Image (cartoon, rainbow, N blue to C red; front, side):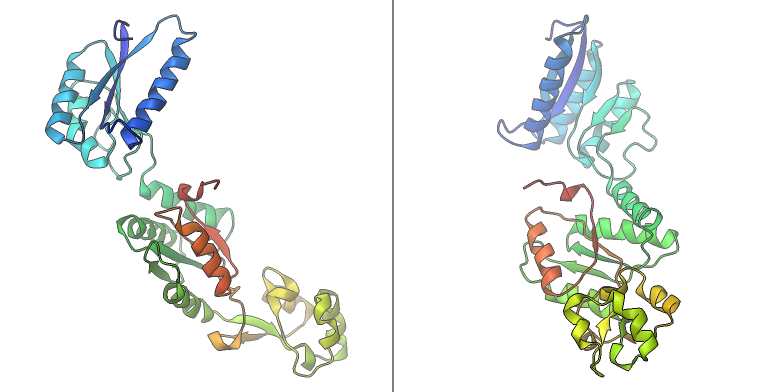
Length: 307
């Protein structure tokens, strides 16, 4: 392939195993094999393994820039490495495509640097836009891992919400790998509870009001309608926007704003959870259910794990 008149450079840290550089190289090789199987002009590959050493990275980039048959470079892997060679790409008019770097602003002022992996800011902004403009959520909490990634994602997400006129109900952090999220989930529940959970005291309704409510009462609770103490979560009765539905029917609701006064938290429209590890996925889902938080979960690409 190195005899080809057109080449691309692979500027990667290789571990000769399952490292991120090795996986990217495998993808590049597969793409080239597929392309060259039917292309009239074959594309070659020039591999440079800088092994994570910045001086080697710099000299390898200079070597690729000096080879006029190299028309583009794939790599490096990390944001600080991209920053170290961005000027070399611009000075030599050599397109540099980083498949994994996530820092915001890497391409700003560097017309020959291309970032294939969306930055944390781009990801968080996209989820916030979707939550407000598509799902029409207003009461949104943030539950993020207590590391640099989680705090960055939480900060960008909150920034975007604020710019769209919505302030997060709560921002709570958990330690990745924890199996009990009592404190951060409790923090979110306490903040969300202040909005109030709507309940209908069915036993105190007059016969006409009870007749209006009866079609909405779950079968398991029909026999309790005549009980003067019987009350039910308005979400169980009317689904989403229960206060509005109750008002349209002329049914009074009672807002409970203390954690001890209601069972499930339903008034929270969504919780944004940017995972730093897929191992936390099952724990978080189970913990939200255990602490009776019934809400929409929002996340970024870190939730795309079929297992």
